[in-house]
Length: 118
Image (cartoon, rainbow, N blue to C red):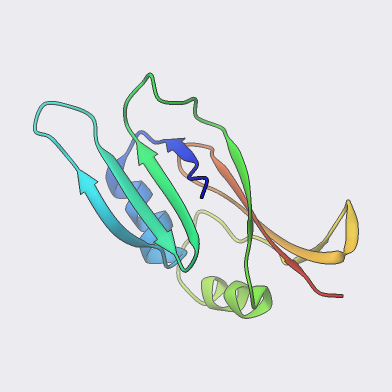
């Protein structure tokens, strides 16, 4: 398994984005009093690690994640009151047989959820 690591800056904004809005769960977290946080989150078989450590990675990364029932997922997140992002559900520009929903977290990391429909 490959687990991408995203650099984040704000724990509370990241939790609102990933957990409250997208539906990820926190698998574990390390939040020391005097240091940066590190945590793992998951949404079914999608696993990400979020890091406040400056040397781990750069903000603004992008991952693609296969997501079953993407239309239903899109409806579910759009029904929530998350005022910072209202992504569309669209055909992938690189292949019309795929749907995609692109979201950008508060630290400018991007996830493209994709589903093959044909």
